[in-house]
Image (cartoon, rainbow, N blue to C red; front, side, top):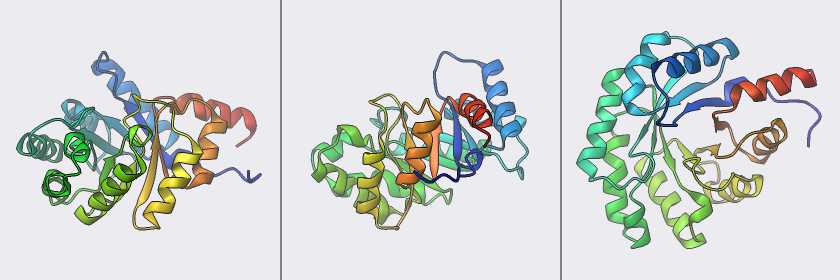
Amino acid sequence: MSQELPDLPPLIDHALLDPHHGLEALRSCCDEASHFGFAGVCVASRWVAAARERLPRRGRVKVVSVVGFPFGALPPAVKRAEAESALESGADELDVVPDFGALADGDSRTLLNDLAPIIELGLPVKVILEQARLSDEALTLLVEVSLDAGARFLKTGTGFGPPVTPDQVRRLRERVRGRAALKAAGGITTLEQALALVEAGASRLGTSRGVALMESLTARGG
């Protein structure tokens, strides 16, 4: 690993996706993101308006809303409506869970029709792949459909599965071939993990442990 540490804060999406948190936790998440200069806060669509109220619209911290989270098993019109609501409430980016049932059936048309109407809203979209649970064939199909639909990022997982690994990021990078950026998410709890994922090719990290990572970085002299 390179001895020079990356500028980590602008790569972190500070996540608050545990449904058992309320407004106080949301405000703390936003304040922490502002303090450290994180890329964004990643929240449920229900919390977008409150996050937007806490974070300046032209500030450096983006409001990122998940859509169809965590299973993606919603009718396309419902998922589009959630994305529209997030947009109207002030979201800057969307992290979208695709229709995994369509993926299991190899139904690329349904997958495209699930994602394209959301991407057409104009916000940068990250498609959540749940990479650790997909066969190589399914992963390749989902990557290609996501890129055809116009996704700006591909995200390794929801965070509810196994921890993301540098090898997963490298394999995803090989499939994407520079056509989209990569967001690693899931079980990023240590500075060493975060740095290894960045070195493997991730340009965004989704984690609820952003503050702990910054404390470790400071202790290391970064």
